[in-house]
Image (tube, rainbow, N blue to C red; front, side, top):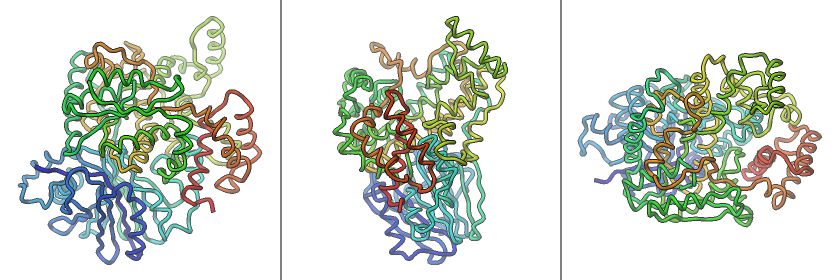
Length: 621
């Protein structure tokens, strides 16, 4: 039996003004890379129209095309992404094979909305998706984003009309928006601090993103309402992280989740680093599909290279490993095309090797498994232990911490200078920042972080390390992880490549919420459970303790092959947005970086990347 899952691009308008169909379809073509195989269009001729670009993974027939209209004609839907458990849902619906025009997951989801309604359907779906659902009976539009935020969904409101899309440039290059591209000051500040603009905001005024696990609904009066259908926060933790049975439970859930994500009639590959997450995913996938192949990016700089470990894992499994070394030549060839993959400002330079590994994988496959999410869900970053081990210091006032900490360091104690900040939230935001607040107050005077960021990093008083670890994981899930997912989605979909993320499977997320963390309480091992599984899966190999992933020596690149352009864009002219940066302080900041051996290459890259984005998408004029 053929089934179909597909990655796509969606676009739509809802409201008082509908763009001419030819203009509308021109905007739709901007997302052709997300779905190069088919396109579709639907309109009620009055106040709603939708378009669709499809990346077919299995079924190439037109029966799986979108937009889709429900059998009762009430609902119209476009969906980007995939729902892994659609066969189970179809069986629960009590429908037979003949009740469906296609074998697609999207038709099953639409039928579930028709028969079950919104709440029950969203309780059952497990996948990665962005959905626009039009209710013709109530004249409402619902925008729905998956619970982890894997797939993007932007929208903008202007002149009584709503525009939604998978790509941000489909909003700001839309005929209604093209003359209203005014940066949102808080979004500019968020970007310059973190290297991306977190949902619910977007870069320009009157544009937003649907948040993970959220439904945003509109009526024709443009009255909006929001509803959270999935929240990744702790309710009741009844599973010990270090219990032997917990490892067995996770082993079983991972096997089941990856089995669902391997549903495909086309071959599936996997990214493979030298760490823990992707080698573990690859092992499970190989157990289920022995012909799987892997893809690794190495570096000519040994300080950024983990190909030896990755190839050891590949040899252990006896899988073909495709290896490419990232070099200065690669950087020069790729950099401009790389920036065109991001229709919103994005400043995490690990996107460069990610772009390259996606390009390499696409020459062989259309579907890849990735290891993203493991660090966030299973307390994998070293900062989890580092911060939680210092929790007792925050029982004392700031002055006391500084005095005692200073004495302790002279005595040889290992005490982080992180205790010198007012709150743990201030410590965490500092560790996540490309450019720190004191720098931004000088180069972007008068601006501040968005309300979302202020809430995300507002830390309560923690009565235990358990409370702190749960807060840190929640913060990473809705903060740093969103930047990682943005990077992977944009670089992969630019190459019409679908990347599935098993660690963000709903069943794994639900399981992880019940785990009681023991990091820095009974052990000091980040990703304790995943490392225990690695020992079982790769018993003869050592597991790399230091997370590296796909990275490059950006400090060297900025000081050599990129220096001239960086200086031209940031010092030689008024940077975008014009009349916004304090040029004296900006020139001093950039100049100091190049004059001194040590400096903040990530912060410089974030500023440079903003200029490259403005150039790439013509917004600087």
